[in-house]
Length: 299
Image 1 (cartoon, rainbow, N blue to C red):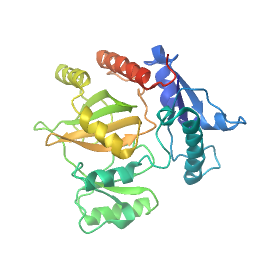
Image 2: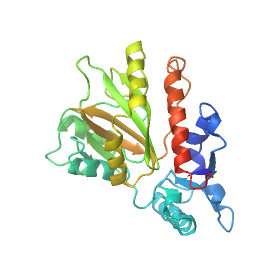
Image 3: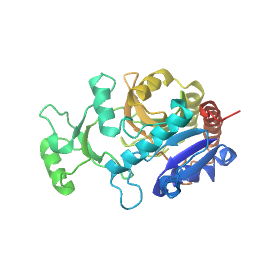
Image 4: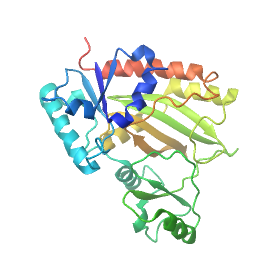
């Protein structure tokens, strides 16, 4: 059995999937909220693989992120002591969050763009750039800031605060002005391609373009998993065993936007659902196989 551990607030990331596209996997995955788990004394989970998500998120309404990480870290250690290190995916203390991940990837020459703490923008920062929070999802499309004057103006509207990042823009549009956002899951030792979205906007949030050519390219991506080796290495650097890697390609090399350890697997119903059915089915089969391979309690 796979135990998917999360905060009660973020349980819908998996529950929504299991109630729709992922219904055939409902017998393989059990969602457990930290709040539900810690309400029981002593805390105990059966043998299986335990995915720690929502790392760094507050537990309930009273624990700040730092103390929440320590609480989950103790749970992780107890699981490791009882079932072994392969029984737990992700570490609340050492799995890299967005900013240290982007900093590490830039320092190692993997990402060509850099990310900075918004209150500490160096003179060497490359414009345009954009502002975003480190610890939350960015649903709305946000503007590019083309010079320091625009940046300072934008900061006055955001008020410098912990977790606000300034991320340099990396233009990955093709010759037709189309941007591609690749999404792939890491599940234990496997990389599972999830989707390939196309858009005319640089911040790709959904499958805006779903013509025959785009759908064919997406299916080819799901079948070939062309970036698996590079993504394996990046997940190893980040010490992340479960999450969704969001990235693009620049000059033939992956450019990593983030590894989301509490990702939605399927979004809200949209007009592209019918035409992208084969892509969803291909992902479901590969995701199911990856879960089986990661499950130390199987057999």
